[in-house]
Length: 408
Image (cartoon, rainbow, N blue to C red; front, side, top):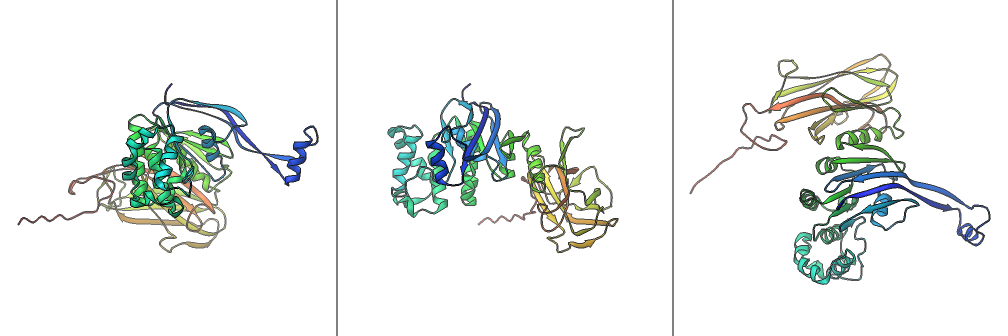
């Protein structure tokens, strides 16, 4: 089927030698003893991407993400397996990949465009669009060696997307660009997806994966660890950051269909989570701007050197809206003994837009959960925000703008 990608039994192994002499000896004496070690960076990857589908690929550094994309685009040959796809493919794998530093930006546009399969006439027709989107001005006629990393990624992305491809493959290269261009480029990616382009996106940005992608794939040590709904996969990945062996991570599907992720080593436990309104009651819904208290009860199970409690409010897409913790507030506790109970309260006005939200709660040491994750619990509470008295507005944040108008 056009625009689809079929990845079957892909594995990639590299041979590691202790010295160049060992490599030469093995080549000269093919039936002699093996002088290399094998390093499998990918193992039996199977993935079917449907036409028009957007799939995000995530994983810790060294998980095999970039190797997989290089195999898909043909720049690296797999040890086993095959990749099949149809349609035009545009790939942005590495910053300025294929750009020659001693040629101008304009000359590189022509060279890169032809590598993508476009004719000179097609590139001529798109040149003004490339210049306009890249927004690097007169630098288009300067040598690429004089470009900053941001300018290179602007031009590289503009060339890769000068025409809407059937399949678009994007690696972490966009993370180098400035915030303005990241917004602009993701806007173009969304437009392409709506028009039917199939997307493979590698990113550590949870918001980007959840906002753009239909599915997410988590790679771990060269294998597919999870595949499915972006929020579920990102929650699992976030838990993995605090438990790289993934030994204490549990995912449970709740009655409402949502999947709750719980992880942690267990030295401290979350014994209660409550969202209370100004009357001290757990409400059916929260009004925009209404003062609330998020109360978390923690039970210390084993002696621990320090304890931090954090909260994160997420919208219905799993995107982070607001997060804080007791360490940010300079209220981290130290040298807690087993059996101790700690009560945390986070008081704030709920200045967010209408919609359904969830609350993530975490107990850990230090500023984040990566060093010592005692317990991380997604979907610890679910609540709805309604606008009952505030001026109508759109978006995820209520800023209470005052509007003045003068006629002269």
